[in-house]
Image (cartoon, rainbow, N blue to C red):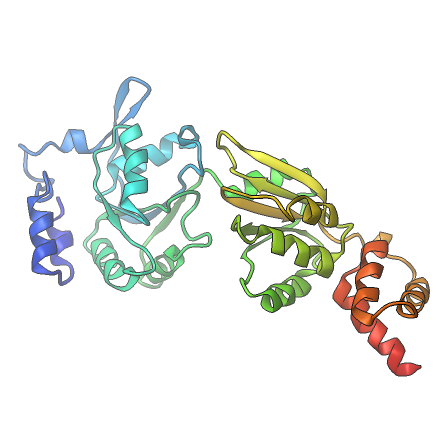
Length: 330
């Protein structure tokens, strides 16, 4: 079945030998003795289902974000029926395939081999094959390198078919209790503190709920930065281990969340959801100036701005800049 795939681009002799020796790797759709039925089936409970043939296209298949039961029937049929199945980590995807009795062999496509593997996948599409792409969890192209393959496929005139399913940003949003009529998914924040704060400031006044991915070892610093730059009173939710056994939602203002996570050991994948700004609740500018003047008379500028942010809920950086302006005018 994969003879055309191997020939589509150069490969090392070792890799070519490994593929050729793989059980069924060289079987063809025209070979009546090949175990095609087994390779095109998936299991639902105790029932084996024959996958329908797929039209030539690039299929972007959403996979579970933690709970393997969250797979869709359409996704199973696509994973079982695709001529070529590409994934981030073959070990992770193999667990899902084994759970549902899918014998299709996954091939790695990730940021480190995107050029070579991407060329092969595009060659497969050119040959009229169906190609399914999955990420380790969630929807391909969302915060992963798959978007490059999608772009190239579209530019080459190939059909691109989304197979929707589990989504960490949406699961976090609906579980956060924050407004969902308008929201912005902003991926991962920068790892450096200044760049992180600059990014938060750039998003501060967007009238929408903000959604970020974050790592457990950075969440404490991110909450501190968010509280200082967006305002301690701004509502937020730390959503951890979504759909898994230890799923957790911590819902509180940013300032309170920063305190909760200051000395806490955190594990697992995290989505941070921050509610939109509340323009109607903003204090009068003259009152803010009076507060800044009072605070700055007894403490350094930076600390005065921080304390004013706690009291007003306004971004610390904005208050710090205003305090400098007031001092310059004095």
